[in-house]
Structure formats: C-alpha cells, structure tokens
Image (tube, rainbow, N blue to C red; front, side, top):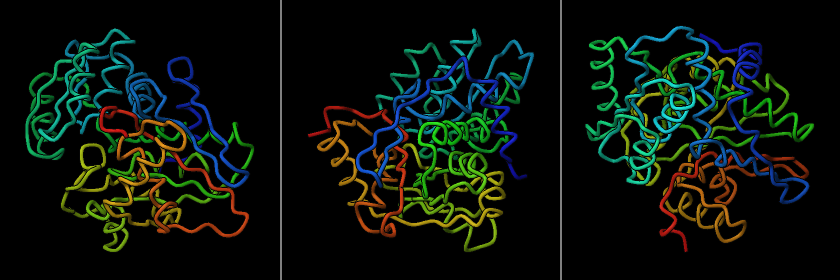
Amino acid sequence: MVVTRPDVERAATRIAAHVRRTPVLEDTPDLTLKLELLQHGGSFKARGAFNRILAAGDLPEAGVIAASGGNHGVGVAYAARMLGVRAEIFVPEICAPVKVAGLRALGAHVTQTGAIYAEAYEASAKRAAETGALEIHAYEHADVVAGQGTVGLELLEQTGAFDTILVAVGGGGLVAGITAALDGAAGVVAVEPALIPTLHDALANGGPVQVPVSGVAADALGASRLGRVAYDTVAAAGIRSVLVGEDAIVEARDHLWRTYRIAAEHSGATAMAALRSGAYTPAPGERVVVLVCGANTDPSTLA
C-alpha cells in the first residue's frame, strides 16, 4: 500500500489542533535543521498517534494499545491522555529508563517485556486480541504513516523550498510519510545505523526482511523489519539509503549539543551523522534539511 500526498494532507487537517508546529533553525543558507524533537512527547510520533486515533472514530472501551521502543509509546500515551482515552504500552527491556518514566508520567499502563521491539510487539498483539483495544502500530498502518508525513508539509511551508532532506529510519513510517508529503518537491535520503539496516536490506532484497538489532540507537530505531507500507511508499519513489556507524551517530549527537545546545537522543542525531561522517555529501549549493527527530534522552550523558 502506497501512502500519497492527499493522505498526508487529510492527516494534517485532522491533527492540526493537537500537535506543535515545530521550529526550523537555519544554520547556513545551505543547511537547515527541522527541530521535530520539540514535538509533544519529544518526537514526531505524536503526529501519527493522533491521526490513527482520530481517524478510527469510536474507540473500544479498552482504549488503545501499542508496542514501542519508547518514542512511539510516548506519542500514543500523550495523544490518548489528551483525547481522554486509556492507553496500554508494551516496551522491550532495552527501552531507555527516561522513556519508561515518561510513559508512566502520561498515565499509560506500561509492560516491559522482551529483549527487542519485535518481542514486545508480539506481547502487545496478544494483549490486543484479548482486550479488543485499538492497536496503534508504530509504522505498519497508513494512518500512522500519513500522520508522520505532516512534518514534511509543515517544513515546505516554513522553508518555501529545499533540495534534500535527511531522515533517520527504523521501521520506516517517518521516511515514508515525508516521501509522500513532498511528492517529488525535494529529494529524500534515508539514514540508517549500519547495525540496523532495515530499509537498506529491504531495497536490496525487493521487500522487507529481518535484520539484526543492536547499537546506540536501537531503543528508537530498533525495528527488526521495515514496514510493508513504508517499503511500498519509499520504493515507488526511488528513495535511497545511506548507512552510518556507531561512532558517527555518537559524534553527531555530541555535535548537536556542543554547537546548538540541542539535546537529541542517538536516533534523533542519526540523520546529522550522515552529513558529519561524509556518508552523504551534498553538491555545491545544495540546500539540505536535517530532521532532528527525537529528544528522549538522559541529559546527564551530554557533555
């Protein structure tokens, strides 16, 4: 299933009253940062969560349920709280403590189980079948993908035009949504940790495949398989992926803090790592946007 720009436009109308219009920071004429880490819940995930819940209409008494590496769960919990809906969130054992604390602070019922996201998802799906709660998948639903894509429409309004946007990839919902939103108005480059190459391997194999999960960004980009909706949308547009190493991600996170005082988590700094490491080299005069997508990190680890 391919998500389209009209899908994203409908999502933007639906969620407009519920999400922040996050700022952009023009560093140079050729480099702009989109600060989506300032979204409610500390990441872009609230956009997709609101769109999924609002598009569903009447909800079951059991409310909503989701599995998450952390950020999606926080987005769902925030949307549920604001809409007066019960939320149950399953997270893996690698979920950062700051994210677990954030989930509980938002009133969600939290179950921590499984070594990685895929195992938490299995437990969540079983629970959803038992309770009848509305399942909000982190990336494998068109409404979620369209909601995430609204950041792309917003960016076009704020900048007027740009040439390329660098987007971190886990399960693929964000990069697919932005691809649909831009609809050819700018190039999209997917940036993935070399240790979790979900899109890279999907493109190489003609469809989503299982990949190992490890590394500093695994709590947020730790999907072991790219979503089918994301693959269909991204592959149809010819989007390419670049891989970045662990040291590059750590250095990019440190750079964002030292240079801009932006407290990004490792996943939120992954797109910047492509520029800093040379995994992506812009052409002379190319106007590049780096999407800084997540802030749910322990600030004591920033120096």
